[in-house]
Length: 229
Image 1: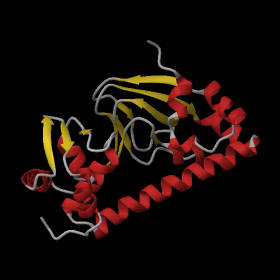
Image 2 (image 1 turned 135 degrees about the horizontal axis):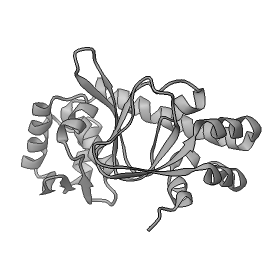
Image 3 (image 1 turned 180 degrees about the horizontal axis):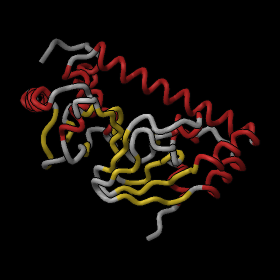
Image 4 (image 1 turned 90 degrees about the vertical axis):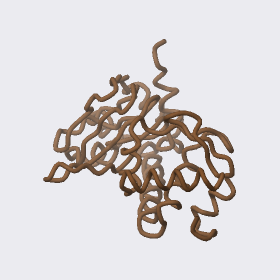
């Protein structure tokens, strides 16, 4: 079944405060893009194609050091965006993006999006509001790295990623991608999962899914309100 462009954009927080008429402009310019698992969507330094809105699947946005080491900046799932700042600012892609699962996106091409932002003030104001939420998210990521230990970072990620209270969280296909996103080594990530499991807070649902058993204690760990486990 053909993905619904309007449905994909409607689930995106970046567009939550955009008036209906302006939202219709976004729907009319959006294009569906499909990416197979492992497909490189763009490379650092490429001209920015536009704002990508993930409808299904998962995308990793990452930088590569001169020695070849990768560091994941974002793991982007349904309802979230990537390349938004480059598209709005009109500069080249500042990082690489790759699908880590079969992925469907709605693409808002750079040129018509920038034209709409110049001509439609309510659209521009709504996008600015959405971008402030994105900045808050980035501040939260920085807090995780600076203020939280490994257990706190993982607990916060799991709580944010769950779809229902006490539900199941689907992890990226390769756990090393999530470890990099949390600024942890693969070994530290595995030990932390084991510690939370041994404490009875989570359990493995299968190879790529974890079930949250005690969301209140996970929240306390994320906020540093419990002693180290």
